[in-house]
Amino acid sequence: MMVTRFHHVKDLPPPNAPNPTRNAQVTRLKEEGNKYFKQNNYAESIRFYTMAVDLSWSRPLWEPLAFQYVREELAPVLSNRSAAHLSLQNYVDAYVDAEMVTRLKREWSKGWFRKGKALVGLGRIEEAAEAFQTGLRFDHDSEELKKALAEIGHQ
Image (cartoon, rainbow, N blue to C red; front, side, top):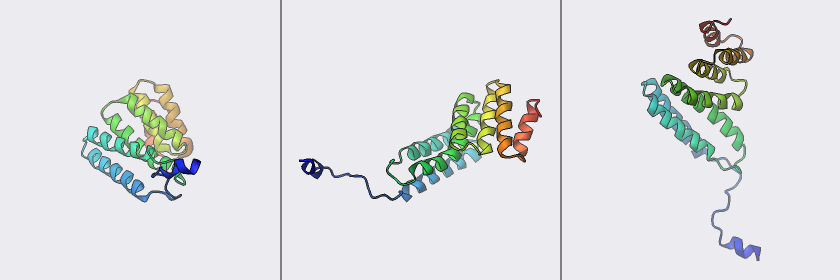
């Protein structure tokens, strides 16, 4: 009886192999976003970064290492999208993306830098200082984080 039901199912999950096409598409979308970011076309860069995020999140969970791929793909894309939002002074959106980066890759100081910059934009200076200091715990030599702390009057 059960076999009869599955007989009509045409789209069973594929074999346990990652989809290299999806990885390449996410990378292409991120690079397109980077191109627009460098041209100061932040709205368009956000559009491409968002497409990359959506595509990465749509990865089937049965793919081997799906969560690892998502983590590695999403952290830089969300960090870049956060930077674009910062450039447009969309501080809440920048904060949300940066917060997600710090959760995906806690040890990556760039996420803490973006989070701190968004918090500065929101006027939450003490929280920004904490974010910058957390980033420095992971990257003691980051001039970017040290400069950001100095700019808000913290050392």
